[in-house]
Amino acid sequence: MSLNFLSYDDDFCGYCGAILELPPQAPSTVTCKVCSTRWNVKERVDQVVSRVEKIYERTVADTDGIENDESADAVVDHICTKCGHTKASYSTMQTRSADEGQTVFYTCLKCKKKDIEYS
Image 1: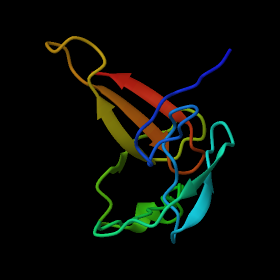
Image 2: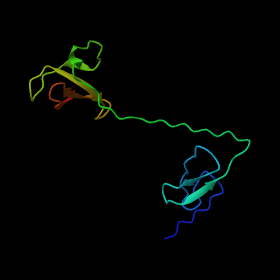
Image 3: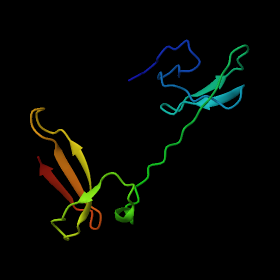
C-alpha cells in the first residue's frame, strides 16, 4: 500500500502528510516521525517563525498530612468501610438523570479505599 501524499506545504511530510517538526535553525534536515522520510528545510526570508514547547509532568497529589490542612476543600468526615478511618476526600458527579441527586465518591485518606454514595 502506497501512501504518496502530495503536499505543497513545507510544514507537512510530502510522503505521508504528517506534520514535520520545526527545526531549531535553517537550512537543515528534519526526519518525519511517522514514516522516517528525511526532508531538507530551506531558510525562510521575511517570515516570522517561532516554536513554543510545553512539557507537562503528570504528578500524584500528596495526600499525607492533608487531614491537618484546614485549607483543603474536599476533605470531610466519612468513616471508611475498610479501615474505619474518619477522614476522606470526596468528589461529586451527576451519574443519573438530572432530577436525581449527585453521586458522591469518597476516597479514604489512610488506605485509599473508594466508597460510592448515591444521594
